[in-house]
Length: 91
Image (cartoon, rainbow, N blue to C red; front, side):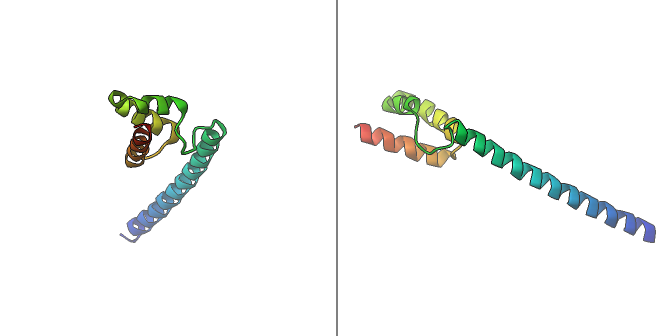
């Protein structure tokens, strides 16, 4: 019984260490992804000309939101607010 507890404890420590390593690698990958998007000009918060064009047409509002999210990685609420602001300034 004592060996079982020791083995389980070692396995637990190993799993925790493995998860920490995965977490560190994920953070590095996210930083690299952000750097790449920034380099390509896709990480900024400014809507592209294509997004602005779609936002002008009320029938294409969802397309504008979708494209803005793809380009910037913003959350849905922030994308909707941005497109709504663009639509209001066009009126």
